[in-house]
Amino acid sequence: MSWQDRFSLAGRTALITGASSGIGTAIAEVFADAGADIAGHGRDEGRLAALGERVEAAGRKFAAVTGDLADIAETQTAAARAMEAFGRIDILVNSAGIALTGPAVDYDLVDWQRTLAVNLTAPFILSKALLPGMMSRK
Image 1 (spheres, rainbow, N blue to C red):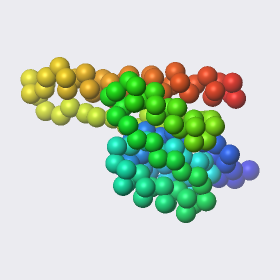
Image 2 (cartoon, rainbow, N blue to C red):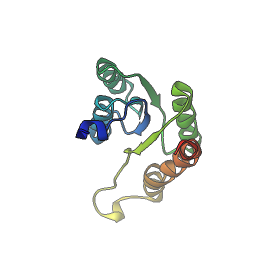
Image 3 (tube, rainbow, N blue to C red):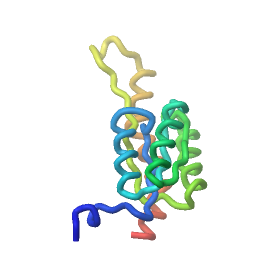
Image 4 (tube, rainbow, N blue to C red):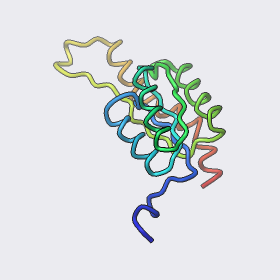
C-alpha cells in the first residue's frame, strides 16, 4: 500500500478553524488534496471564498463558515453550520488562535479573556458539539 493510500482522507469531512489564513489555509488545501471535503472557518469571507475555489478545483466540496470564536453562541453556530453543510464532520482541526505579544502589563483583562475564549474555550465547544458523531463512527 502506498503512503498516499495510507493517508487518504477520501470520503471524510473536516472542519478547520482559522482556514482563512496561514496554517489553517495550508491544512485545508492538503486535506482537500488528500480527498476530504472542507468546512473552512474564518473571519475573512474573501479569503474563505478563494480557499473554496482552490478546494473545489481539487474536486472536493467546500463550505465557508464564519463567526467570532470568542463568542460562545457564534462558536456553537459554526459547529451547527458545518454539520448542516455536510451532514457530519469526521475531522476537527482547531487551527484558529490569537496571541498576545509584548509585556503582559500592556494588556487588559478583556484581551486575556478573548485569547482564552479563542484558544481554549472555542476548541472545547467545537469538540463537545462534534465528538459524539465522530465517536459513534469511530
